[in-house]
Image (tube, rainbow, N blue to C red; front, side, top):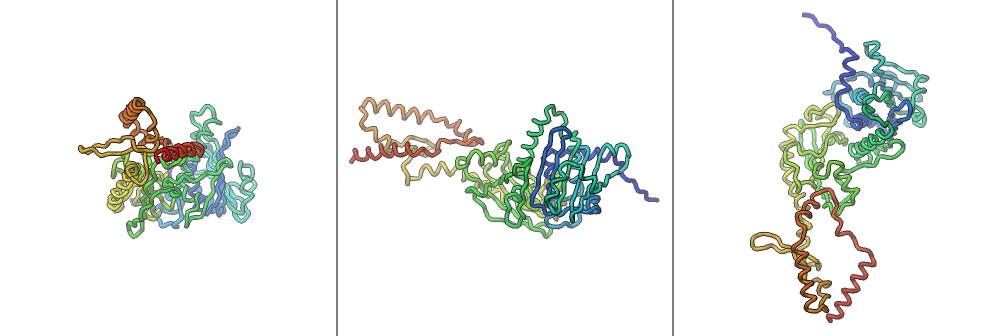
Amino acid sequence: MKQIIVPPYAPVLMEATRAIGYSLEAAVADIIDNSITAGTAKIDINFFPIGDSYVSILDNGVGMDEERIIEAMRYGGSRSSSEERDSTDLGRFGLGLKTASLSQCRRLTVVSKRKRRYIGAQWDLSLIAKTKKWSLKVLSSDDVMTYPGVEGLSVYDSGTLVIWQDLDRMMSGEVNVDTALGVKMDAVRDHLSLVFHRYLSGETGLKKMAITINGLPVMPADPFLVAKSTRIMDDETILVAGQKVIVRPYILPHLSTLSAKEVSVLGGKDGLRQQQGFYVYRNKRLLVGGTWFRMMRQGELSKLARVRVDIPNSLDHLWTLDIKKSTAVPPEAVRKNLGSIIDKIAAGSKRTWTYRGKKETDDSRIRIWNRFVTREGGVVYSLNRDHPLIEGLHTLSVAQRQIFEQLLLQIERGLPLQQLFVDLNSDKQVVNETEISKEAFISSLSRLLADCRNVL
């Protein structure tokens, strides 16, 4: 028996890895993972559609020397995916920089600055096809100065610039590049604002990070609306292979208390109902969200339930993390513990939905509607005939009061209950209970006081 070395054929393998299935937003997020690992505090993303279009991602991290930049451009790197990593490392397989970038373009250039020295390296698929070898270009300080966006490194003591050129996959099938790039930028912004929201908001224990896209800041999109009146339940710790998985359930506030912008943040394009469930974070970076992992169905009464699950990178092998870091499946030890948490959170979400109906029966305030439970267990809503505004109509004649009573009955019987149910369970905000103006309030109060004087 003998052993021989069979290296992969570069042109075929590099073209094949382009088809892993990265979206543009997932590819950009993968590059930012490297920036965070490098200790960056600021990331500037630029989309340039004019002429020789390109995308650049600049950070002010620790930078790389020649040895490190060559290692960063190696497929697979020199570390096994099962090797223990630093607790803040967002990498996994040593493929992200290359596979993410070349999923969008044919030429990837990385320029880094460290100790005032510039160094660069480039994968060019056209060169690979020509040489049929793993031909990596190593760029000198003079070489890199000709590349777009390099001037941005001059303001930092250290940092790294990733440049995508020859955007064949990214612009495939697009007729109007300017318009298409604008739409793609919006998608990237929405994705990054959610995936890195804990870094963008400067959560305790994390180095706060700023991201801009063509000069405009990316704002954090918190899927739990912690700054609002979200109910935060007690943390639960699950031990898996000696490592801690921290689970924190949330019950979102009722939709009627939220602004249209807040509802948009919570639901996004897929709607609030589709965003309920677990949100799994690896080193505070969102991997996957809005799923119950088939442990329960997405229902209307559980749509306000969300559960944050924090996992360390030391458990990657148990969560079957993919190359794109966009899917994760909980191991059996975690699934068993999540079952009891699901029951608690779903019950809490249901109570939040039904709370407003119970509140209407509170006798501490005079309300326009009364709620009655019938002998058969049904519910009837009727107008409160003792409300001061209705009582104030005592000056009507008998005939007028009879007509008015018929009007009240028609309003009660004509309540659009089915449509109300649909609206309350949709992502649209029902705005009937918006605050009245100061003038309208004073006018209404004056009438009530006048009626009270007449009664006395």
